Amino acid sequence: MIAEKGEEALKTAKLCNHCLGRLFAKLGRGSNEERGRAVRFVVNMERSSRGEEPIEEPEHCELCGNVFDRIPELVEAMKSRAEGIEFETFLVGSRFPEEVITREKELWERLGIETGEPINREFNRELGKAFAKATGKEPSLKPDLLFIVEPYSMKIELQISSIQIYGRYRKLVRDIPQTPLRGFKESVASIICREFSRAFGGKCVFKGAGREDADVRMLGNGRPFVVEVKRPKKRRIDLEEVARAINRSGKVAVLDLRFTTSEEASKLLSTPHRKEYLALVYVEEGVTAEEAKNVAKNLSGTEIHQRTPHRVERSRADKVRIRRVHEAEARWVDGRHFELRLVTDGGLYIKELISGDDGRTSPSVAELLGKRAVCERLDVLNILDG
Image 1 (cartoon, helix red, strand yellow):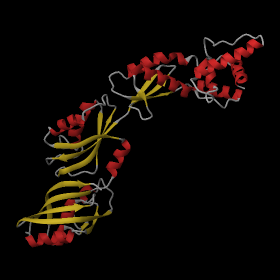
Image 2 (cartoon, helix red, strand yellow; image 1 turned 120 degrees about the horizontal axis):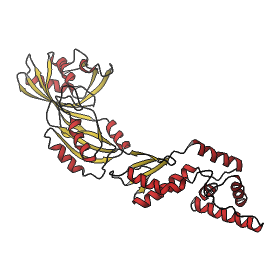
Image 3 (tube, one colour; image 1 turned 135 degrees about the vertical axis):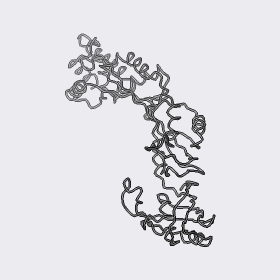
């Protein structure tokens, strides 16, 4: 059957050994070129037994146009395209002209071929093998570099996989927003991304697990964040050195930096966290130590109904959120101040928990006191995992 199909194919079109062998790709082992050479050999033995001339491999293949002969040149072009970029793994893809794909399909249909392999699949594999041998790099389904090759035009598109780094940041000073904001010279994101971009040679995108206001410090164990470095030129970077460079700013400190995956990064950023805060509450009409203690007692374990605050209603959906205060402790400071330490669900606006926001948050410190109260200073002490 193979000899008959092979001879019929060779009579139908002038095929190179790659294209001949690819018709029987699902049979046996070895490369398609080896398979094609073997099929041609058997066909010509049969023809010789009948006194017929052999069908030699043509100088020009009518199906592929001898595209496999271009592999050495393409390997050099790929090496040139990747010059200056660190990588360990790669993947090869290709774009073949529609007329080549159509010619192959028509040949399969004409011959009733059910054991064939598409030309682009063989080409990708053979080009990948040649590139791996020439560079010592490893093919991978999750590669550092993806080459998209147009073999006839010799055009090569290079896609560089992003790098994901997880860490936690502390914001040590006030009046710095988390991300760039008009009116501020820098942000947590710009301070962090400046050093990552410099180290990896790519564009840095910052993503935080929640955020704090510009006038709020982030202390303790730090807020989780992920940076994505797009089109990095370098991959083998000492993250401790990057951390030291960021920490020299004196404004932002990072810790626990490690490489991660996009899947894990998404999970880390979407996981809800309880938060521990320390707020300095100002009560203009005055507050006693007993009143401060009662506020903490009444807030502890309480469910808070909070409508979207006035100050963020332009950027947030107007709805009522239900959050819980898990712990509350008060320390009286003077006749108009007391400190309030809180452990709450994520997503609870603490400034409005204190002021009441014209009744949009209930209960609130102001409501419990029966007096006007404002948050004069606020720190996030810890992000509590789980």
